[in-house]
Length: 295
Image (cartoon, rainbow, N blue to C red):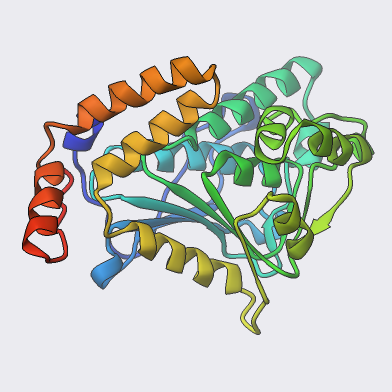
């Protein structure tokens, strides 16, 4: 992980469209359906992935999945990225889930391959830096699974979310059956998945599904603005320590506490020789804000 921090390639500052690679089973790549940028000014270490497929409410089809995978691969190489936001360019929608119209045209074998790729995409969202989903509208099925793959979630009060697959004769197949119970507990996850129930932002926060809920604004991007504020809180902190803290939590939650303590010890040992740790100690001693550089 630390090796990845040294292989830097800076992002283009304006929005940059990423074209997907060709998909052999579904023809050539379509028009760009996502955009990637690093923010300007003091927030330049915050990167954003904007999903923009209005014709299908950001449904996860082959082209969009390809482009998301390409974007994540690019972002992993950029050490400037300290926080990654997922947002929508389609008003009233975060992501409507898998593209069932596209899936209807697939054979059973192709469906299996596509769902496996969706699962792989959600695993790639387990990014080294903290990730935040800004849910300003519908986040259903695979859309909620995408948000669950992020570290933190912010929702507008008017957002609608749920793992609704059982209402379509399906079950969550991109990590929902695993990430939802780890987020809100087994019994509540079973209830939501068994019933296909939809929640608004306030209900989701009450269950612990989202970190913050905000009242929606006229522009329909209130969750995005709150997500940016949250990213700005993370930004000044030591980036290697934050990333190692994420590793310790994520890996530790999968094992018993004794093993988790060992994982924490390994992560802590990796942080000891960093310049940022020495800078943090010096700043404390000199009573000044630290200047972390990610080394």
